[in-house]
Length: 356
Image (cartoon, rainbow, N blue to C red; front, top):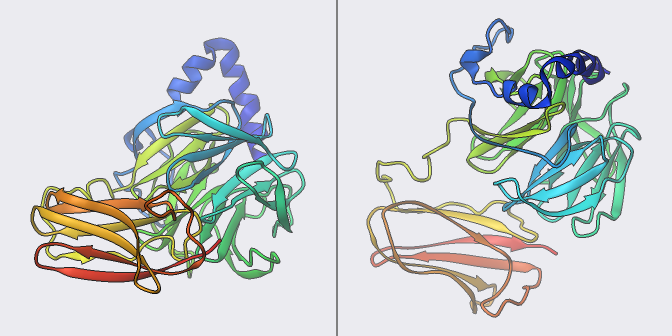
């Protein structure tokens, strides 16, 4: 396995310098990473690490974002941890197989790829119990990064250096294309630009890809020499180092998009994501001027069920998470809901679907 070969060399460095030196040396900006050709795509001056922390274990392979917190998986301890964005451990569950690798979140459930069993498991995030599983699509000895986009599961591995679009119910392959590097490990779906991010430990690059053709859009240098899975939180890209056990928060050019200095050019209510929603959905909106604002959720009969915002807000871009509960804290049933944004002079309404 490619990661194991890298590990042998790194162990020799540890003997000389110590683990703490290796971990700190793994923190690099793009300007530090020279001489790593990305092929026919230009390396951009982005990908700056804005924050990092140590995971609970080394050999961190998988990462997922559930709308509020991170999930990280270790193939060394075969455990999955729920962590806040500062690195505090909130909970943990056992990994379902023998070599936990990629993770992703579908809005309700956690998915875990396993490089030992070459299976992809659907998990109850509260208990870690396996709900179902599908075979990994590769023919090699790895099953790595995962990404979720609406009702589609994506998978990659460095044995085949392919990226597959899968039916999450059966594992049937809906489409595939080659990865750009020589050691594909991580995937993340970027709903901001409707693209895929793909990390590669062979070239030490992170690629932004067209999900239809697989063509590279941009690339930047990875912050770790054995880069693994990826996840996207709506603004930042997160990745992890397999040997170092370090989790990195990366600026990919969206910082300030929702909070930029310049005022938005229009009043708007953005379609919630994910939609359909399971446990949570994010609602974003933009205001032309400061003033009284309300954001309310109504059921399909028009009855008010939740007030998310009711007060004065500044001009600019805003986001709110709805946790599928009403004003009394009760979880609402499946169905069609409407969210209405109202200011002193404007009102707009969008529809979303709640599934349980």
